[in-house]
Amino acid sequence: MRAMRFAVPASLLFLSVPAWSAPLRSPWDALSIPATSRPYSCPAVSPLPRDIVAYDYYSDARKSIPDSARLQAYRRAASPFDRTMTGAERAADFYLKSGSRGAADCVLEILDANARNHAMTGTMASNQSYYVQNWTLGALAVTFLKVRHSDAGTPAERGEIARWLVQVARSTRNYFSLRHAKPTKDGHNNHLYWAGFAVMSAGIAADNRHLYNWGVMTFRDGVHQIAPDGTLPLEMARGRRALRYHLFAAEPLVTMAELGETNGQDLYSFNHGALHRLVHRCVSGLRNNAWFAQQTGFPQEKPGRRLTPSDVAWLRPYQRRFPSSSIASLLGQVHSLSILYLGGDPPP
Image (cartoon, rainbow, N blue to C red; front, side, top):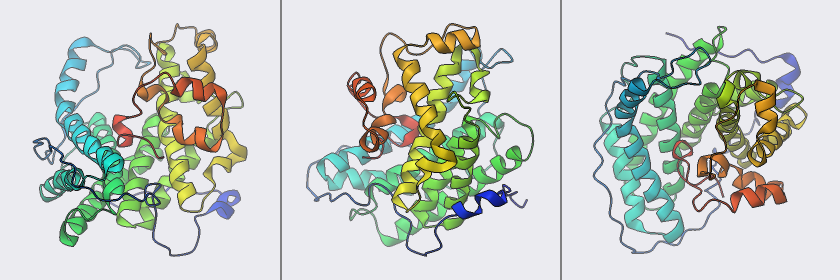
């Protein structure tokens, strides 16, 4: 089936991607990591299956109240994917911190095993299966980007991994292109942005401009939805999880803006800098969620007693570009910056 394409309004054509043919870059390409012989114990991670069988777990129309039995079933189905992401991410971030050849080799071993198994390229049992596919794709593509300038792996293995990432990315892109063409929620809400981040990252890993450009279009679609008060209407509809899902939507959008910056695109200023409004609304909500509670009519889940990395770690690159004492205070409250679906630590 041919993938449907997003229509780009004429007013946006001047924001098309740069015409030059320079290789696509990632924020980690500029790092100089001297290789070391520090040992690294690579976990035994089995290749992921070709088919993904996972189903959603909410019991209400707002998708804000999980059904406990269905949630447990989903966690069992997702656990192999979580283990694979975690194994590759810990190795990739250890390589960045230590230069360990063993850690870089570990990342390539995990990715190569999945590439040879054609993981995640088969049948998706449900919408939730596609979400698992794109979350895993984005995380693993980033781990490849973090170690691709090491001497790990052979050229043949790297080529096989790149081809596999492209294959999975096309599956993700095709699903969400079809969903975007219809009045579906997951074709326009945070799921679309996570798919864009995943496909964009895979595009950089494989130097595939078509995939990269598609990711940029999902970014633009998301930023166009940001209201004057900094909210995303589809995420506000999540009731008690409204703030949680604003944070979840901001993670891929800010990260895609970073990927764009590295490739000569100022995505932060797109649509008159609307992304800044979303970031400021999220930061305000983390400091005091009363506004979200008042606007939705529901007490908010976030933040909990303690901030988690997924609450704030995505703000690290934003803070570097746009320093804020409020953001610095939030980042200072977490001991780790690793986010599972972002491929571990966010861009430097």
